[in-house]
Each structure stands twice: as structure tokens, then as C-alpha cells.
Length: 185
Ligand SMILES: N[C@@H](CCC(=O)N[C@@H](CS)C(=O)NCC(=O)O)C(=O)O
Image 1 (cartoon, rainbow, N blue to C red):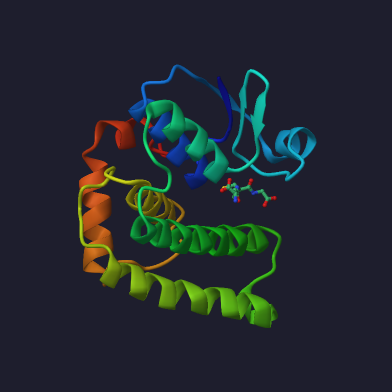
Image 2: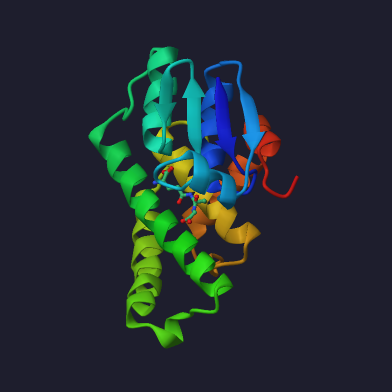
């Protein structure tokens, strides 16, 4: 099985953690955006090749992994709500980051101002929603830990007032698989 992506993408990191949890042997193929634009119709990373199976989104990749592991994906409606909420925030934060690299900032775009506002209401809600500090206990929680650590790594948003979010990342930071997939490594 081959997983294609970068070591910095929070979406790729989640898939790597799931593959490790499922103890599925795989090769991480490091690629850049030019390669994903050529090889994936969605022009995004991650994508996965497993024999004849070709998957172009981290959610279908996770379903494939969890199925092989004999686990449900999503595990519950509540965990899927958390997962999709974090996913939307991840898309928002990554878009803002990539647009900024191209010199387009919220000051210049009402659409980006709305994206920025979404981060605040989203993080407020996540902070109230996340009750566990068991960092890798479900896909909703893993996705949250991957996104929050990416936000800290890229210095994209001040999280210091969000006690539960900070506590989740601190617990994750002590986990072997989280350490192994650290984007700073
Ligand atoms: N829905 C996708 C999102 C993946 C995604 O946004 N990946 C980013 C890297 S972190 C990407 O490839 N961006 C390239 C682009 O938007 O041009 C998934 O869950 O796999």
C-alpha cells in the first residue's frame, strides 16, 4: 500500500496514524503539489494506492483502513459530527494559509473574512465539545489533534485561551504515533 503526501499535511498525518494503529505495512511517498496535481483528479494530498484501489480523499482512505482493521468508520454520529466539524475548520485554515502565500489576505476579501470568522466560532465550539484528552481514541479526536497541532506548527491561530484544545494537543504530544508523525521532525 502506498500513501502519497507531505509530512506537514494534517490530512496525511491522520492517515499515517490510522495505518500505524491498524498495523498495516505501507510506504509513504513524499510528493509536492505539482505531483498531486498530475496524479490525483482532485489535485490534493493525500491519495492512496492499494492494488487496484485508488482513493483521493483522506476520508475514503480512513474508511478503507478502518475496514481492514475491522473497525467502523465513522464510529458514531457524535464522533462523525466532530470529525466533519474539524474537517471544515481544516479546509478553512489550509485555504487561508495557501491564499496568504499567494498574497491574498482577509483584508482584501470578504470571503476570506468569513473564513476567518468561521475559525473563531468553530474553535469556540470545539473547545466546548471535546471532553476527552485521550488523543488518539477516535477518528474525530485524531483529526482534531492533527489540525490543532498543525495550527500551532504553522502559527495560524492563537489557541492559548482554549483549555480543552490545548490539553488535547499536550496529551497527543506524548503519544508515540503522534511523535512519529510530527511535522516538525
Ligand atoms: N478533503 C481533502 C483535503 C486535503 C487537502 O486539502 N490537502 C491539502 C494539503 S494539507 C492540499 O493538497 N492542498 C492543495 C490545494 O488545495 O491546491 C482530504 O480530506 O483529503
